[in-house]
Amino acid sequence: MSRNSRIILGSNQYGKAEVRLVKITRDTARHEIEDLNVTSQLRGDFEAAHLDGDTAHVVATDTQKNTVYALARQGVGSPEAFLLRLADHFTSSFDWVSGGRWAADSFGWDRIQAEGTGHPHSFVRNGQAVRTAVVVRDGDTAHVIGGLKNLTVLKSTESGFVGFPRDEYTTLTEVTDRILATDVAARWRYNTTDLDFNAMYDDVQRLLLEAFSENYSLALQQTLYEMGEKVLEAHPEIDEIKFSMPNKHHFLVDLSPFGLDNPNEVFFAADRPYGLIEATVLRDNASDAGNAWEGIAGFC
Ligand SMILES: O=c1[nH]c(=O)c2[nH]c(=O)[nH]c2[nH]1
Image (tube, rainbow, N blue to C red; front, side):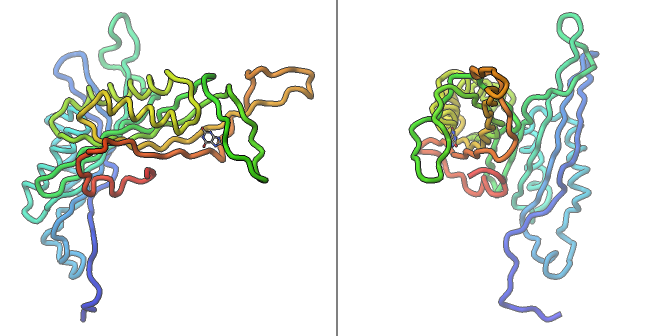
């Protein structure tokens, strides 16, 4: 086949998406569970595969899936550490693999309560946030991005929204006492790979919840910024944090047709449309993110 010399291959990556991995650690009768959804994508010299169908460099996506399971046999530890190990494995095993992108969602399980410290091997899926992690490896450089999504929070007072501009299309009334509710999605970029990522995750989640709850909110934008600021102040290992937060509106129901008052007690929880508040909070001297954020959808 003759080739059009003015057409070239651009950026590319490939691998296995959403490998469902459950790892039970059962060294003792008290088991531990790790539950992840892992995506592995390789980057490097794959031009011949795209141009000629030459598979000599194509580490099969099936092999990538198997590698996820095989490396899990030695333990997961934390999503971030596990993805770093996958990155190391692929870049050191195949000369032409120069890097890639590895991502995981991880799902929490709590022990079913028994006396004392909980059941040794029975768990209930934790309905709280889904933990997210991404490792982007380019040569010897690795970027690690921790995160969470679906962290649903609500405060029933200590929030208002006043002072916004009014034009011919503005109907919103000013309120100094409203419900503020959102599903927090956040991704934060570490500036080192040598960390106890599980401890970091727990502390970032704690700080996010604390910041959401502690101050009067003049706008969801302000609360978002305070959440990011609190994380960056506490953790020099994090250079930036991105948020995407829907403003889940709760409208006061007019009960006057029924002869009833409604002192901020009965609400219609609308599911759409919703406000969508997104921002990045970062250090003014943040390290270079390179292409770390590429492919992470839904943030600005
Ligand atoms: O916290 C808020 N920020 C907004 O930008 C906004 N816009 C709106 O209609 N309500 C709100 N609330």
